[in-house]
Image (cartoon, rainbow, N blue to C red; front, side, top):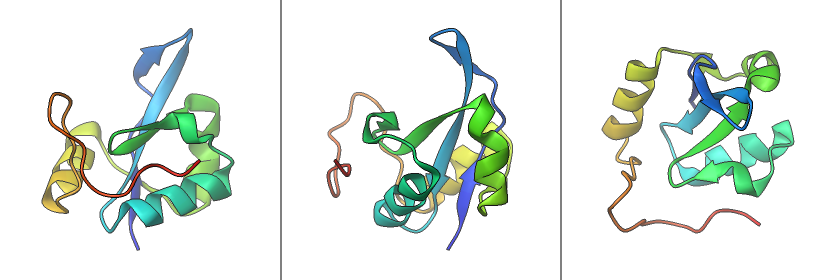
Length: 95
């Protein structure tokens, strides 16, 4: 099991955000996010958007801190990358 989170450097909606990904499966990612209390609407194709004030909780729960480039490399190497503009594959997000 490996979940990764990048630093909260992504602005949006008046907040800063991190990306949370799995290098194993979307099922693992959804379960971890649910345990954090992240809403299903936070799932965006291949990652969860996590607000900066949840960053430390995600790390305490076991997410590994990596830079954004490393996160993308791990997601791509796992075959779980779903770039925008391409059809999404795999299971639908949890509801």
